[in-house]
Amino acid sequence: MTTKPTSANDVLVYIPNLIGYSRVLFSLASLILMICFPEQWVVAAVLYVSSFVGDLFDGMAARKFDQSSTFGGLLDMVTDRCSTAGLLCALSKEYSENAGMVLLFTMLIILDISSHWCQMYSTTSLKQHHKSAEGNKGRFFLVRWYYQSYPFFGYCCVGAEFTYVAMYLQSRANASS
Image 1 (cartoon, rainbow, N blue to C red):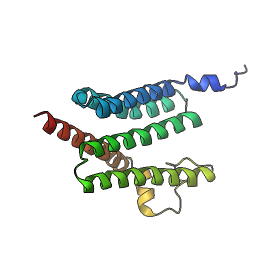
Image 2: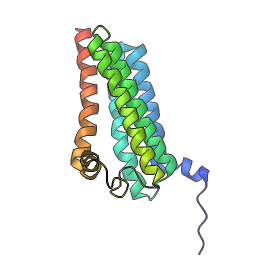
Image 3: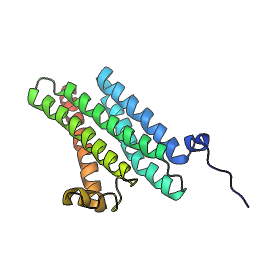
Image 4: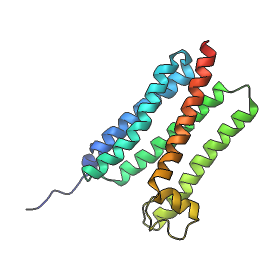
């Protein structure tokens, strides 16, 4: 029995990629609401958190259905980076009267994008996955620990995102009262 080779069209409709597309839509909708329609802050936050939670499920689906792909990995990483950068931009608007906070949010965007780009580039050039033990061999111990200790990795990712969301919610709740 021969199996049909996977085509680019097949990859586009992989279950984890469908989840990824919904994450993009939720993220974009949340950022539009945060920036253009701030009175819709509760809906914006729910959409943003839905996009963030979808990140857990796209990875689970990729492993469960054996549908990991380069495209899916790229879609996932770009969605994560753009969503976080967008939320930090929305926070810059919320805290625009505090130059220190705007600078902090700007530096966090730069750190997030540059650190992920460096990690992805360096491991991809070795033809390794950026989270694999092999791809992180010989790296600074914090990088190895970050990617090898799932609880620590999860705590950092979830902690950062929920801190940003909490800051947004607090700012909007204060503005509404």
